Length: 444
Ligand SMILES: *Cc1c(COP(=O)(O)O)cnc(C)c1O
Image (cartoon, rainbow, N blue to C red):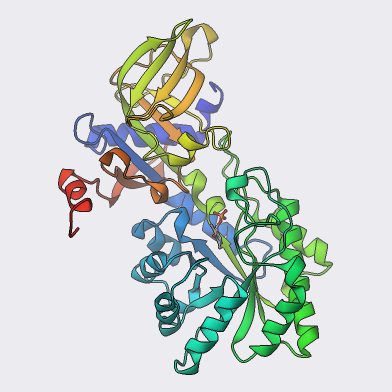
């Protein structure tokens, strides 16, 4: 832990924290916790994806559910990426952030007819989740011209990875058409609806699925697309959408996402350069594009001891509302915790004897509301100190919970380095009590 505290990524976090305390962006009374996003790192990661071994013509979309802050989406759009929306709400958010419809993929697993009509009217890339949905779309198209490229999501049943709650390609996954028992039905569906169906979609993920498995799944869908075209006797499928699902390393500051490794692996399995494929390629990465580019911070309010022998319990403001997945699935999503003084100086120490076994507790009325358990953390962590939780750029803001009606914290973007100093900008202001009352009111 002590060595990790000296990485350049962590030095930047401390610098941001220092600035946040100095400028009042983090304030013990008014704004005791906040999220911070590294805008340079987000841009760099998006650029790395665009310059990776995927064909330069590929449409890379960003999964909105990973982080739906509109200011972040605008930044992602400016780097030339599209957006992947998994609900009508996310679709509207993507449009608000300025993504052109032809750069938006819409793949909710459960769409109403109204939602389908809206997608067709806007002209986004629409993926049906199952064969029955294709028939619903076919009926809508009878009296509704659209420029939407339409696709079908399949489940290659390639395996579940290590986190069952996130497994989208297990044999019984709820997503897409299971290829095993439905191969012929998929051929027939594409043949019958060749006038509008032109895309095959898969998403294998998320965290916990290795590159080999992910690549195997993507390659199997390319093969399926070829089989469909062979069965139809013409090029019905023209685009293959391989989804997202690339895992990230939560245990260290290694921000590099392995886009090249993944693309090269798919090419290797298929035995050809991805640029030579007869299909347009689409990707939908979320976590790997943004997870490492965000951290959360909170003032410590209290510290007490409990248990035998006495372990320290540190009460602060990040919990199951702000870091939902870690609190509910602590073994699958353990997060690192760093400690800083009230002014943002590191408290990390290399000496075991200066550390105390600690639980980092959240503010909610529920016993599982712990960000970390049994961690050896500096004894000098005390009320008024600050805890820093890295790697919360993805699946944290979007999973915010209303339980206990605590305000959504302020979100800041930062740029800069150790040399030039950092600048913070507000990406979203924190909620206040009126926002909370409004949320639970008859007419919010
Ligand atoms: C969640 C999701 C993604 C993004 O997954 P990551 O693991 O964040 O890369 C892509 N496509 C679909 C359909 C999804 O549901």
